Image 1 (spheres, rainbow, N blue to C red):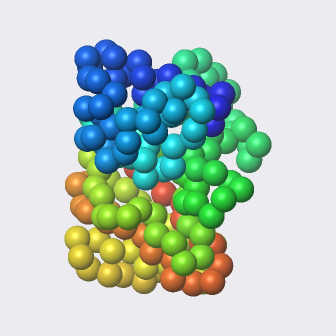
Image 2: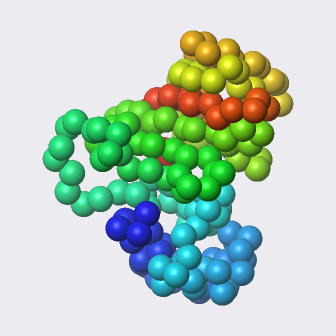
Image 3: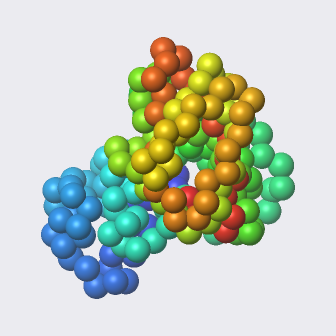
Length: 184
């Protein structure tokens, strides 16, 4: 994540919006010291912290992972943009499309054993279709209704639907999903 300069992008957007560190940190539910460390590249934010900052800045999460020039149409496992820390028990998102400039976004979410995709259910602008690629099963809570998907099952999640994924199993699960328009 260091090469994406996420902290600098947060700082640039904060300054563009003429928001102080204290105001943004308060809106995102983190300390001003933590925000300063993130902006200066001393600390990498967790996905939940990044989501909170994106929400407070009224920016889509993918904004922090955009690169200026991307002309390579083929994405290999080694060239995927990854959100999350692969070496820690954290939810990981891998962008399966070259970038987020198109009209659809294709991602893979890896949820560690005993984890959830987020602390609270969240919605987004676009329609989402998800497919449980690997793992025994995963629970999906949509608008307080719970559904269990087994390997090979897919689901459509309507726009703006508050949802959260729960992996109650003892092994990680991989969920592949597409969102249109890109809003991750």
